[in-house]
Every structure is written in C-alpha cells, then in structure tokens.
Image (cartoon, rainbow, N blue to C red; front, side, top):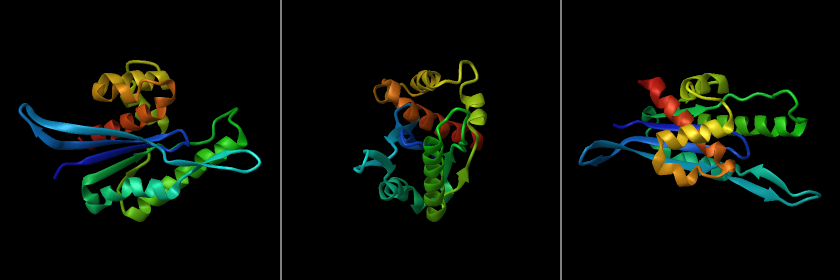
Length: 172
C-alpha cells in the first residue's frame, strides 16, 4: 500500500497539505498526488464578526484518511505562544492545535508533532525561514500547486504541504 502524508498548519489561516504517495502509475513510473486545503472556518456574527474553526468540517476533511491509518502519517506543527503575540491570538492558535490534535486522536491516525524550528531546518535549509520562503520552497518542490500558492496569504498552504513532505522524508 502507498503512504499518505498529511501536514497541518493549525492556525485559523492555516491549511492541510496531503501527499498521496504512488497514487497514480504513469508511463514514467510512480507519480505522487498533492493537495492543499485551507483550514475550515466559520464567521460568527456578534459584537464583532469573529472567525472560528469549523470543527465538523475539519473532522470531515481528515475522516477519509482514517480507513487505513497504518498507511497514514499526520504531521501537526507543535506551535506555542510567541513574544509580542496578542493574548487572544495565542489562545486561538492553541485552540486550533488542540482541536486538530483531538480530531487526529479520535480518528486513530498516527501523529508526529515537530516544532516549527525542526521541520523548517530540514525543509528550508538553503534559505530564510519566513512565510515567503515557505511559499517559494513549496512552489519549487511542487510546481503543480503553484497557482494555489501564489498569494501572500497562501503561506499556510505552503507550510502544510512542506510539513507533509517533511513527514515523507522522516519515514524514509
């Protein structure tokens, strides 16, 4: 069976990147399949409109991969509060991490939780570690996803697919 690697950037503006190894057989050998999805969110009206994680849609996104968990590896970025980050944004970031961690555990999917420094050291070794560097590297490695990584706000998608690739390299 082929492996599936899932990278998750847990923020509200994060994403899920999926590499399905050897999913298609082409004339030149095995071809991997790549996908990126924005983190499902909802806008909740109140005093202020507020974006929230859409937990049901998040679970639905990962559910198809739970049919054969021994052939799946999820890489969830182990994030933490950063200096000068606001209290509510730190709480939201941690909330997203906890939601993803709970969904992954409930589905019985194998999980690795590298720090941003760990996976970026491997995946961005030849360049800076900022969000544009992630987009640039992801486009280099996955040119078929270039149109889905072209905007500045697509950094979550880029980081998610790079984490999936990090998981693939971890397994090799």
